[in-house]
Amino acid sequence: LEDEPETRGMDFGARVHDFAEAYALGEDVTASNEHERCAEELIDGLSGRLYVEEPVTLPLEVDGYRVTISGIVDLVHETDDTIEIIDYKTDSTRRAQPEYRKQVSVYYHVLSEWFREKTITASLFYTSDGVRERIDPLSLDELHDVIRRHSTEI
Image (cartoon, rainbow, N blue to C red; front, side, top):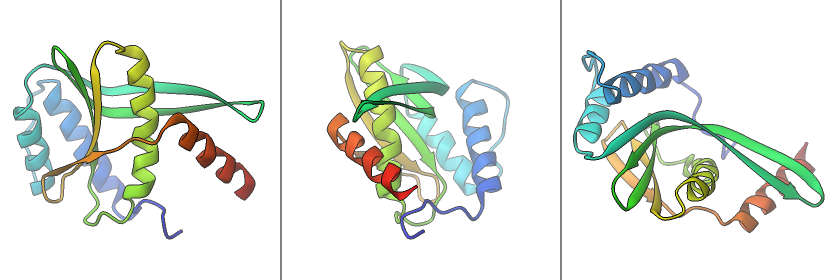
């Protein structure tokens, strides 16, 4: 379980995500802790169109098998020429970042199909310290390899 994301405090993480979603949608919510204040500050600094909790599905063919990976992008920030994928993390460490990289790589490839004419970037936003870290997405070939490794572990 060494490279599994931190699971303690999942309820807390869900509350921070819920706050950030409501705040990005312009609902009348008030930050109740430092994590929420960091999310508020991030969102306030984004100009352009925001999409929240955007469901994505990435169908892949791996060794003759059809595999579909789905997820929900926390925040998509659209400007005239860019799309930014922002995934909130409430972890106090960066220990799970390799796992998160796989997750945002899926988002990256789906949004690259949706917005072919725009530059796509992906980042993790750590609400514990307000730091946004750019993530270099895995290629589709690397995602195929991840799926192959995972299927042999089951």
